[in-house]
Every structure is written in structure tokens, then in C-alpha cells.
Amino acid sequence: MKRRLATLLLLAAAAAVLFAMQRSTPRYDELTGPLLVSGRMGQPVRTRLFDANVERVQFARQLVYERFDRQTVRTTSGLWAIVTVELSARSRSMHVGRASWVGPQGFQYLLSDRLALAPGQSPPAIEPGLPRRARYFFEIRPDQVDGAVLWLSEHVGPRLDSEAHIKLDVLPRAADGALDVMDTFDMNAAIKEQP
Amino acid sequence: MRIAFGKIKTRLATGIGSTVAVGAAAVYSVFGAGPPPSVTQYTAGNAIEAGRWLVTPQRAWVSRQRVYGVTLRPGQQALVLEADLSNRTQASTGVYSDLLRPATMPGITLEDPVVAQVRDPKTAPLLHPGMPERVIYVWMIPASATPPASFTVDVVGETFKPVDNLFGTPGWFNPAVVGQVTLPFGQPPAGAEQGS
Image (cartoon, rainbow over all chains, first blue to last red; front, side, top):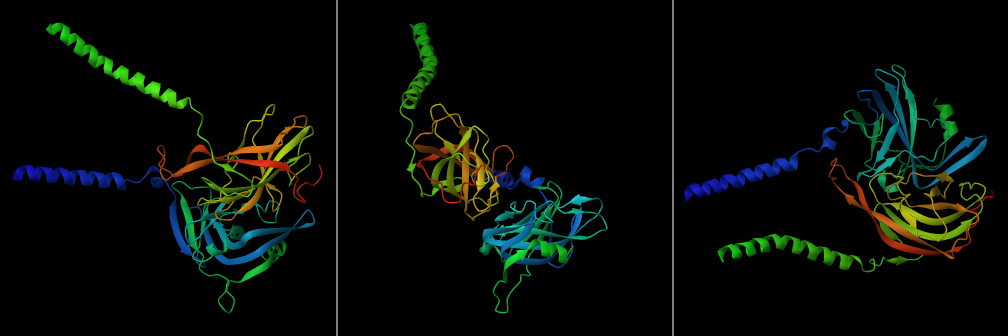
């Protein structure tokens, strides 16, 4: 009787262990996913291919730029978030073509595709030893501002390659603590003042 | 006697499987032959939950001009449907061309629609989570065709699977008609058509 009980217990334990192992096996997707490199604003984040340093985050209700000598205005139903990053390549020339603004609940806002032909909007090409500034423009909901993270990588969905996750924790604030949102952000003027 | 009984038993045993199969096939064909299940009917202004998207059809019209930056080739006219799209997923996406599927119209074959954003004339815009945008769907048809008085469109939704069977990744699968919208072809809103 006792022996039978012991056998049953052993069987149950084995089943539980097997179940736990089955449940905790990482999926192919996770095994070959991006390798995260985390950091925060104002400090360089070093990934395999590039270094990134987020210098500034700004918000605007609309963007203005000149295209074919004509003023173009881009409005949005939310906010424009403008992230200025200093980038430099580590070993070879490359583009940091993929950037996303990830809100506190995990909503992922990809780069806006509405700024075609705006100045400085091709994916920034960077060279080893020649750091340069790049600006990324996102359209976000106003409730996705606090606790957001910038994701940077060379390609869409990097596999077994590093992806920088940079906490955006220094936001422009007015004296009373409210978020400082510009009415208009002039992309041409910004390019001139900060090549 | 014994042998005969054994034979009957064997015959019965072999017959059961096929009898069940024939019965099941009959039941399926009887139920399958009935009218297709009715889909929910919607009109302009109804918000419809369809998988990735929350879609609110607004109006439809027939255009012979350039509409919100979508250019028509000579000999073409366009069936235009204006709708509000809100992204219900976790990331920005532009997967909406299979969302609306017009019902078949006699004598008209439809190609894939061109989708353009109304805010500024941009085709195939990326739409961001929780930020509704007004877009137009444009289906080109020959200028000689006569469009019907109203536009009937099936809304196709997909189902979210947190883990798919092949790669173990999350995704949207199994498109199915979740509703049907009928809109009368009316007048375009002011500023929609900009000459050809």
C-alpha cells in the first residue's frame, strides 16, 4: 500500500516537473530575439554596431518644413515627439533605420512616415569615429509621454543583435511641472542650428 | 452456427465505422446546404470592431477626379469610401487593405483598393495605436461601368493568437466577415476632389 502510494506520488511529481519544463521552454522567437542594451538619457549606450546618446526630447503640436519652396504643415491628432540622438558607428558605416517610441503600457509607436521629403528625414547614416546628430519624429498619444523608452536598432526586429532601449526620463517641463509643448516646430531652422 | 455468428459479428464491427462516417457526412451536408449565417448589418457612423481595427464608415461617393491625392488614370472612375480607422493593436501598422471587401457588383471586377489619409494626402499611411485617423479607400473601376445606387461592403476581421503554431509568435489570423456596411453613393465632402 505504502509502496503504491510512493509510486503514485513519484508519478505526479514527474508529471509536474515535465509540465513546468514544457511551459518554461523559451520559444524560438525569444531565443533568437534582440539582445537588449538598456540605458538612460544623457549617457552613451553602447550596442554592438553603434553608440547612442539621447540628448533631448521635445514635443510639438505641429511641424513645419519647406518642400519645393512651399511651406508644409503637418498636424497630428496627438503630439509630435522629437528625439535628438547623438549616434556614432563602432566598426563600419551603417544606418540606424529603426526607431520606436514605446509607451509605459508597451504601445509601440514607429517613426512617422508622413515626413517624406522633409529635411533630414532619410535614415541617419553614421560612420565610425564621426559622431553625428539625428532627429527622430514620432506621432504619439499624449498619455504615452511619461515612462517612455526609445528603441533603436539597425533593422526591423533585430535577430541575435543588439537593440538599444533608452529610458526617456528628462522631459521638457514648464515651471509648474506641466509638460512643455511647443505650438510649432520648424524642421528647417532646427537643421540649420544643429547640423 | 458459431461460424455464421462470428461472420455477423465481424460484419457488424466493420460496418459500424462506415455507417457513422456516412451518417456524419449526411448531417454535415444537410446543415451546410442551408442559407449562410446572416452577418450584422451596419450603416454610416457605426463603429465596427474588426480584429486589428475599429472602423467607422462615414460616407461613399463615386469620383471621376483626383481625390485626396489619389490620381485616376484616363478611362477610370473610382468608388470612394471614407472611414475612420483606429489601431487596436500594440504597434503602429499599415495592414488594412483587406479590411473592407466590396460585395460583388454585376459587370465590375475590383482590384485592391488604394488607401489614403485625409489629414494630408498620403497613400498607405502608417496608423498608430489608439490614434484614430480618417482615411479613404479607393477602388478603381472602368469609366464605362455603371455603379449601383448603394455600396455594400463586407468588413473582414481577424483573430489575435498570442502564440502561432509555426513560429510561436503572436499574430492575427483567420480572416472572417464580421459585418456588412451599406452606404448610399452620395456627394463628396468639400475639398475632397482636387481636379484631375
